[in-house]
Length: 226
Image 1: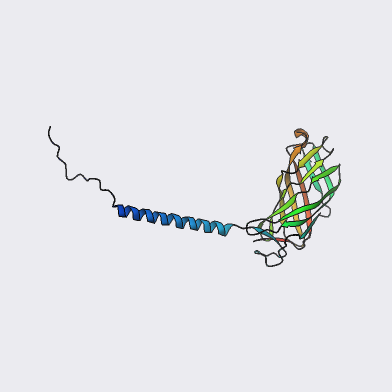
Image 2: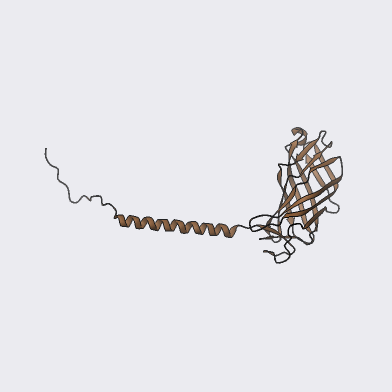
């Protein structure tokens, strides 16, 4: 068998210098660690909680309302609390929310008020409050923010031709917005309170609530980043 001739012009594979490979791996590792640290720093800088404040300043330079601070909101004069379902709409001309701050808020949490007393009265047909729940604030800017509720529940007894029970122990709903001021305004806008018990045809999968409250305590009241 004839022996083959190796053409010297053909380049042979040259393995990387092991020291060069280690150096590159070390550099890659350093870059990865630095990138991770930068990402963490950016994330930490963007995280922001909320506090209840007596002044329109962020961070709060006035009084930051702490645990146990009393809260009260009353239905705006001439306004109505309304509940809409597929079978119709009911309305009430009196509503009061009273409670106390149970979470003052922090750099990573939002302030919450535990509702000790919830009155919805002088209604076009009977309505019963079954769960008082809590209100939670989230700062968005300029002393204002959004408001969510947790575990508030009520039952419309006869307006829709059958009892319709909404909300309760497992519900958590976006209520609307709070506009800071003296007094602050709490606007419940097309809030969808989920149906717990009742006819889907008459009660729907949720009841839609609308109402505007004036916050009489604390007054003035603004939201601020923490």
